[in-house]
Length: 448
Image (tube, rainbow, N blue to C red; front, top):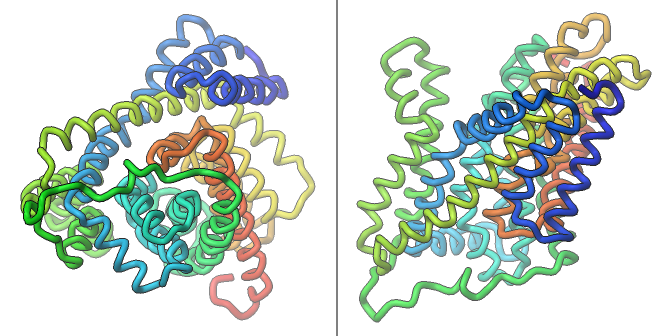
């Protein structure tokens, strides 16, 4: 089995072949990812009898977290769209932020939503706004995908109680309340720069068109569909978010009680979306003109391909993780003579790219560097935030989030790299700059 630098070489070659298959030879991403996952496992020397198990377990383990979520999320979005709720929400956002600042409004909304809600769930829930806002404002849909994706992933990595930042705070011995406060302070400029500013920039340079069939309103006969209210539209969109929030706060306020048990159940992301789908079926019926069977069929067809691609991305990530590349990177980087906060950022960033999971990158980096805080002579909060900043960017095709953005944003792979991967990198650098800015005031700010 390959070791040391050859693991890095194998990883780079695998990515190169993956991009060739998808971009140049137009191979379907699911098939390309599956081929590369098996090919990489064999090339790095994993015993042949173990290869199928590693690939299939990686596929299955990924879908354990997001499989049902994707299916329910697509159905939920289908009902919101068919009822006219998405259009109502878009109108409200335009009134609050105005046409020119609507991407900023979506980015900030994403940042807030992703604090209690996992990235995948939040992107699925809010993705219905993308085409509607693009059609109403004339701003490129690329800009809105960037704003939403970067807003979500920034808070997912910077602000507890999402798992990554929560574990980082624990491993670095940081005060959780202050860690949340400073994480929010660093997340806001990262979201605005990576999501809004870069989103406006890249939206003007990446050519794409919103297809008419994606944005035109449902054609129905006069009087056959009632007009949905703005309040009901926001209420339906907020329902899964509120349920998940209830789960989060019940753990904080009522630990070990029946209240926590109850809200822990209905606030589970899969249960929350299931409840929301059932509520949509009941409460949105008067506003939907389409046949329900048609809506289900379209949603299932869309969800099926997304599930396959997401699972295949997880399989590729499992092969890379099993290869030991993470352990090699840890050993190598500990000998580098660079500033501590920068080292933490780079370490986390490389693990994010190589392992395909921001949470795994944050947990791994903080597990290694956390016990060294006393010797490093750095603030636990600043070190933790630098680690979190490193988990934001450089999402590659071994990350399931890459394919969620690719498919729900209706992007090509090159567009996903420019919008999602590069946008996240810019947001991560901005978050790191904010961490350094905080360090300048470490003598007067509490906890630093």
